[in-house]
Length: 401
Ligand SMILES: [Mg+2]
Image 1 (cartoon, rainbow, N blue to C red):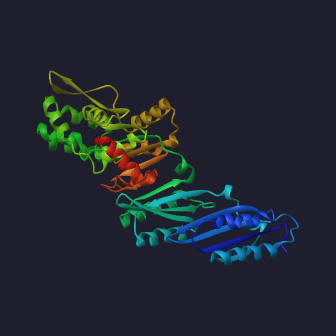
Image 2: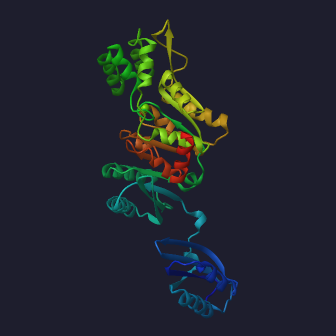
Image 3: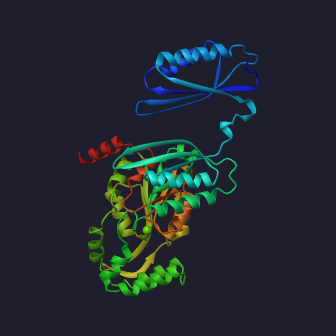
């Protein structure tokens, strides 16, 4: 007989058909059984239904309950196993810390990533996959309760995915389930497949000089503002017509058009937060009806660049401040904000957002981000935000009307 310290774990499997949950729930209702926990998954035509049951104190019906459940199974061509679990071994769902991993790989990546989890002694609680829009994503819910170094696990997973060349997202379960409402995009080498300053330097015939400063800045010889002002100074005299010519030939990153159109259609707030230049950012803002665009402002006089900048410099810290300010102004909490960027000056902005996406980024930024996406994999963002192929098709067909 079951005592008050005992629960019953029931596992049912077999062919899918309508009415299975109803049949078992009705059978249990007769005995006033409490269903403490329930999970069901189905793959193709086979289901697995798992029930954790607790009887009222002093229940005398264990044998009858099991007989009734087995009877329902025989009617529905299902298989049943069960085991008793002492009360003190039942894991409290509310106390678990869960992360959601989404990866875009194959059997090898499932094997390698789950091996890392096993080495870290982390259980996978659920796995599911979805395929649409030319990509398949696999989502694993993992239990990190009691894990002492979560950052180490994240870094190991990001390193492994980089080696496997598969995109990977790691989010807390709570953040994952919150609907995202605001997306801040970096511009150069993220939304567009170019660096505006390099194109302008080519046009002005100072590409080598500008590249030299860029290299020094990357080495840490200058801060971002100093290197930006030095490079812009070299562009003095470049005509507005030349800049407009570059702007009109700007190439979008693969999938960027579809991404912006779909998010706009779905009602997301969208904008650009760029360390590049206003003339390009404003153009994109108008073209895609974005809600905002922040970038460095080129000073133009008599139809040519003066080699100076106007207003505040948009550097890494300013990008993060803008993201905070915009989310504040729009009344959207940070954990409902997505930030996407490729460069070192996106790191702070990505770390502030509920979902920070490193796009085609160098090692380092992907450690700060929740997600590392390869070049031309913008459409993987649809999977992460639960957007379906139907949403995308509808958005794109509305655009062409
Ligand atoms: Mg960039």
